[in-house]
Length: 150
View: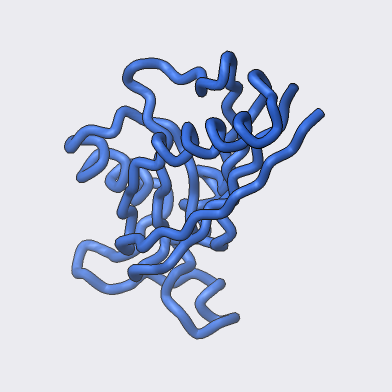
């Protein structure tokens, strides 16, 4: 089995900013296949930040700009109705304000794995691979893409 690894860096927007990284997954598969001769297998993307995530969704303005953030804030709100940052025990450890961010990223997951066949990722027409910034501020994030196959 062949393995190919490449890392790419992104500049994210805080509190559920999203970047469509579908093309970057396909590019990693294309490069991996070209270098190793593989044509089928899996690609895993892993974001190395503690409060970032990877998921698949339809990358359209409603879900990207509002719906996912609102849903995640239901599970792990950042501010109360008066605009005050909510307390999480995590804040005591590092004297920061991103306890809710850790919950969001844990629910979503820092990695995603997709099969590829004939050198093409196997996603549906409305699926986009998406990097989600769960932290409360803008960040710089890496995704490590690892392509494995035959």
